[in-house]
Length: 203
Image (cartoon, rainbow, N blue to C red; front, side, top):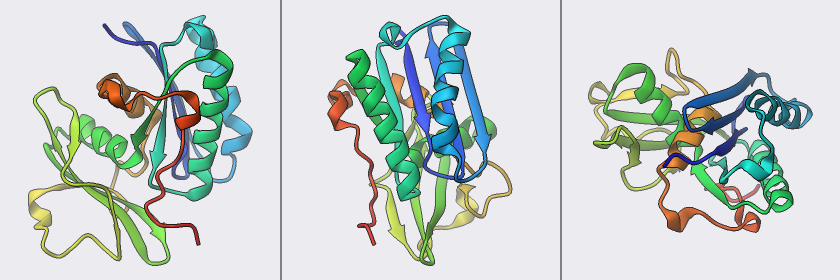
């Protein structure tokens, strides 16, 4: 049965919130850097009001846990943690690159996807994803940090999303919610487990 899930994604310049409930999806999305903390709680309130629900009606809270902007990741993790504590709900962290790959599949139908986002310091976060029989992206190995996607990849065999792509540049909470629906039960944790995945150590 489909869960009622509130999802947040703030790992890039985009800030988004989605509420997925059986038969309905509500979402808010804005692309504007450095305003995430100012708008995210009002976006949460908006989607809950649209669905006439409260946090206590939810089954789960999900968030894009990275990799991405250090500040953005901390915003999503801390907001989800606070909301989950207050409502006594569990949380699940979803790779922000996986969310972007899932969006790439939704918009292009591509089954083999390379994702990359700006990691600053002349590096990129990237990952290789394949779509399974359920239409859900699965990472091949793990998300990575390097100067560029290795030359060993034949880019003609993949659809590129994220930095360098003509479209599909930012992950969305809609895909975070979808991936949370399919998350293994072992990935669902108590509220205090809402922590970011940085890959790069803080500098």
